[in-house]
Length: 87
Image (tube, rainbow, N blue to C red; front, side):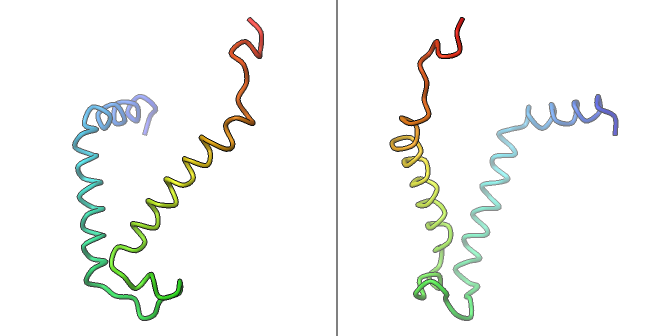
């Protein structure tokens, strides 16, 4: 596949971003619904992962915690003044 054809394909996908987002959210919803009906044989995390949707909630909480930690704790150590690198 040439670079121009690949670029055209990616541009076409970018133009249909709303459709792709809908597809991805539909797949996510199906996976969460399947998690209600498909049970694991045994839990590993104090049997919390036996509850339906545990990993979806766990991923959301951990992702939000990472964002908050980076924003509030790490960013003050790594940020620089606006003209740090000169003009």
